Amino acid sequence: MERVHLTYAFDAYCGWCYGFGPALHEFAAANADRIELRVLSGGLFTGSRALPVSAYPHIPGANDRIAELTGVTFGAGYRAALKDGTAVMDSADAATGLVALRGQPGANALDAAAAMQRAWYLDGRSLSDPALYRDLAGELGLDADAVATAYASPATRAEAAADFRAVRRLGVDGYPTLLLHTDHGTDRLGGPVASAEALTRALDQHLSPSL
Image 1: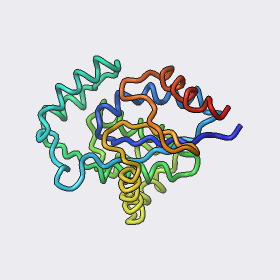
Image 2 (image 1 turned 30 degrees about the vertical axis):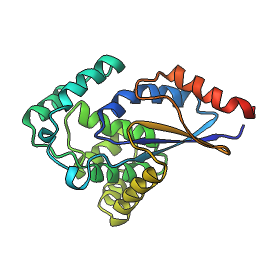
Image 3 (image 1 turned 90 degrees about the horizontal axis):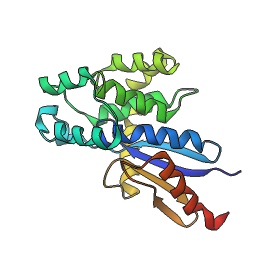
Image 4 (image 1 turned 180 degrees about the vertical axis):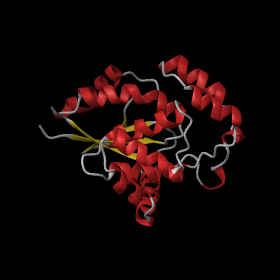
């Protein structure tokens, strides 16, 4: 069976992406034999928006809503980081980290994205800390030295910036966004609170004319 191509546009510092993660993982696993999924960072907090978390006072309330609608939990380390308020959310650093991880032999980009989000939303660890990516490499069974070298490389940061441009070209204006690419164009599948089953049904509906 020829696999269909999907793009997941997310940001590691996006709480709704964190909430959507479990359903997306379940969907990806259930449809692994027929989909090819790429993961791109969108750049939610870059430039003048790369600020301490205290600059975004809406976040705690949004987290309550995310937890209510998706069932995810926010860890003690993350809650402590919110209370302290000094951690800077820099999506360019996070996107560089994703590129460094996903580019390794045997890496799974969706697993890497999830590991990064757990590091922030459970443990409150900065996604700008190079040491974090060594730890995540170990967690994901990747070469820590290779990941560290990649994270420090200007080429990796350039690829992260290319991710941002690719997401803009796709017309994505919010996160998370899951896109299906077909001969007929690009269609969005589901939304931030969609279940794995709903995503599979949407995929089936989009593909049925060509079956």
